[in-house]
Length: 184
Image 1 (cartoon, rainbow, N blue to C red):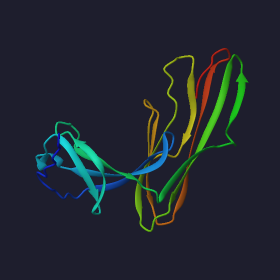
Image 2 (cartoon, rainbow, N blue to C red):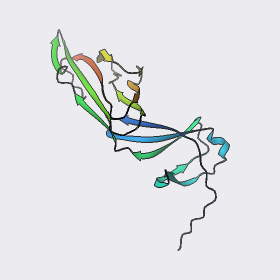
Image 3 (tube, rainbow, N blue to C red):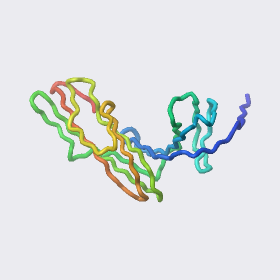
Image 4 (cartoon, rainbow, N blue to C red):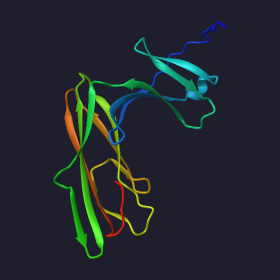
């Protein structure tokens, strides 16, 4: 069976570009394009070909029935931006206080804009959230733009100049009964 591809329409839009990184999950940085008022484009549910600067970057599925105000499309990995998440050896400690064990952990997030342009980067990380009353997460230290305590999500909105490097820090302390085991 022969497959035919028929171009129905070609559209150009004015997206807002943003780099996104979550080094706790993946050390790649991704470029995304957010399109506002996408509902006005009268899109049909279908697979789409995505081009960036005239270069094919991949396929996506357009679902016009989504409820978000913005349509976000990934444009792939941005190799000129690097992010590393390293354990802060100055903050790694395990102690006992009474019948509790206390584990202090910290991380350093190192970001480098190796490109020749200013970029906006959304940097995401997380702090553990306990669902168990015997396990407490305390002493959260962070310099994030926003921190969602219920989900444990930290977000930094960074504006980086060409060839700029920066570091962000986070740390926390977990208290739990001596006999309990936890996975971090």
